[in-house]
Length: 568
Ligand SMILES: Cc1cc2nc3c(=O)[nH]c(=O)nc-3n(C[C@H](O)[C@H](O)[C@H](O)COP(=O)(O)OP(=O)(O)OC[C@H]3O[C@@H](n4cnc5c(N)ncnc54)[C@H](O)[C@@H]3O)c2cc1C
Image 1 (cartoon, rainbow, N blue to C red):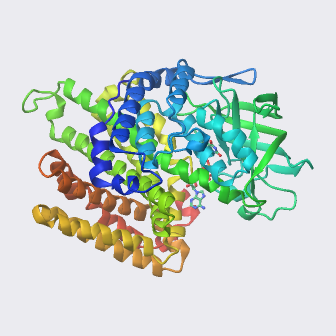
Image 2: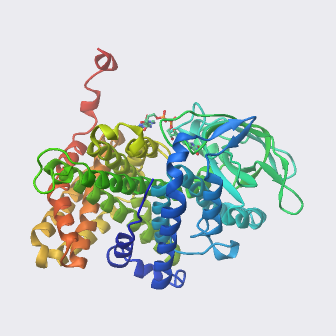
Image 3: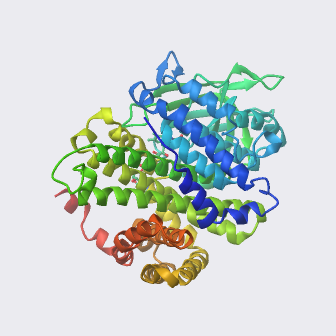
């Protein structure tokens, strides 16, 4: 399906809105000069538009399949993967010592968005590998890093993450896969994992699984979980893929969408694995991969939103229906305008939030400053949940803009919706992200939130000159969010906090999105960015009031009806 990368939005957001210049002013990222940034964005756009976008439809129509225990991928995916690997895109943010480009996460985030917009199901493969690279870089032994990282960075080998089991989904602590010492520094891994993305393929020479499992004496729950690297083929004396390990792909799921991405049931039958990180410290090690992937999955939603928006706009310009003023195409109808403009401003807001998160990650890496690290930790669940919710809502509106043709597969509008739906579920459901926000991310007494709200209000002050009405609305919204945050911080009953977690996260994203739009309007001066900011702030931001009222209602009302009442 066709796709045009929104390069001017990326360039403007990076240079004028989210502060990439702070990142490139550090020694760590000094190589990311403006010329490098421009060249990377434009090359990634070429790859996404020319090579990956044509694979989106074949991936849907010809799903990955299992033949005699081997996964056969969709037509063209092998060539698409090779183009991603040979372009160096898998290792864009990986350390140069292992062959990576060492560029900022902010840039990697823009690149990942383009690739997911073009072909979500294929892009999930390198996304998993990127997370594994980061996990091994931080928690792998010297030997593991030296052997695996160059091969993962080059794309010769790829990586997966194995948490989920039938009885252990959101509740990872319930997992039962066992790990027993072989007495030679390796472990025998036994158990079944389900829903494993890209568990196998026919284009890399090895697949490296990061598997959560329990040692025999481990305590129950998440404190008794360790992490193991379990390759499909055991490395031989030269470090190449050698004999097959004791693991197999049992079956592939038949899914609503994302057909090009094989989602597997995996059986580990005493497979050889190497421990990553300390004994019983597996969750902390896996969290490195999960945090990377949470930003990446949020960005998947944003990419799909962009693709769905472009398709809906093109259709709306073409389709003639009704007596609309002007040329008679449906783009002239007020309600279609409402849908298209909502799609555009929400996608932009979510993109700005993701890039703010990525800049915070980069600053944390470059400076080690705990304030930046706390900012990144705060923005990660918001980016994941709001990015993916936006992907779903925009794709859903895209179907509506197409009318009946949206429900017919040939336009591709439905595929965007089917493909993106899972992003709100995997990598921790959006409900779990919201609970993380109101519990763990407020454990500092709200300090990171209040610091961010101070900055949003300072930006609003700066925007008063020329944008006074919009600036006041953003300032007020930040203040309302501050008051609700104070209520949450003071609330001892976690159940009350959890009851309002999803509306709180969404209200937070609304305020952040308004901040991104307001700053964009101020930095751009005249032009359409002002009209976009006005649309977002005047029509979408007010949603935060109702959402925050919901937050403070607590849990009581949720249990006013018994399960029997619900069933009546
Ligand atoms: C296409 C696809 C690809 C996937 N890829 C991978 C992969 O590569 N690796 C991997 O390990 N896993 C993968 N998963 C699994 C995915 O991460 C899980 O499906 C997800 O974490 C949810 O777990 P679950 O399906 O068991 O749902 P459940 O945990 O049963 O959740 C069901 C509902 O209950 C809610 N819920 C659960 N617990 C709580 C709670 N404590 N408080 C409030 N609400 C709660 C959830 O938010 C959800 O709405 C994939 C899944 C799919 C569908």
